[in-house]
Length: 229
Image 1: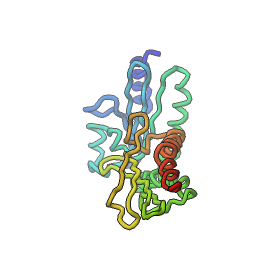
Image 2: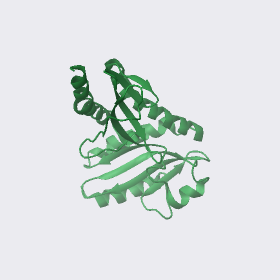
Image 3: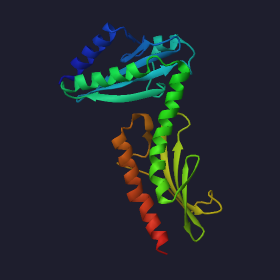
Image 4: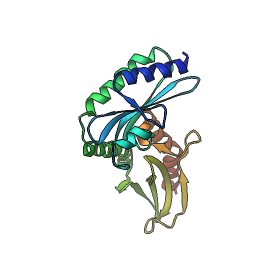
């Protein structure tokens, strides 16, 4: 697969379907769905694949349609988004169907609807962690799950969201039961040399892998260690 040729083909297809390309940023396309929201498709490619970021953005940050016209939107400004890759010609129809279905589901949403959808996706993401930690005896408070290990020590799993993006750090903390901020130990979950995770761009399989990795490499060893004492 010649990825440059594929990129140019997809670019022409989007323009034929009524998308506009941002004036100052090539590869960023938008289709206004109402006066405050747009369906976004950003194309990029390397020697192996064409990557397609798709989703919905609204004018929350920049104010009006001029924002889309000049610069489109980068991945972090696209409030609700997914990513797909086409690495073989056979991938085209599958990706096309996925994107068209996503568009049909949410294209009628208002700006407020898009922001509410983003909030719901975030809630569902954190809910996957809650479903695992609750049966293990952890109690949730905000974005922290804590279990008393006995002996005045508590174990906390913390989902720490970046203030500037949809990315999360995950921390595993041992602390005195009566004072969370007097850390006895503090570790950041690192999987495959990566410690920062964008919840909107992770598949269910990737989320499950992250949860299992966290349990097997951070949580369960500490529970075993302290509960055996």
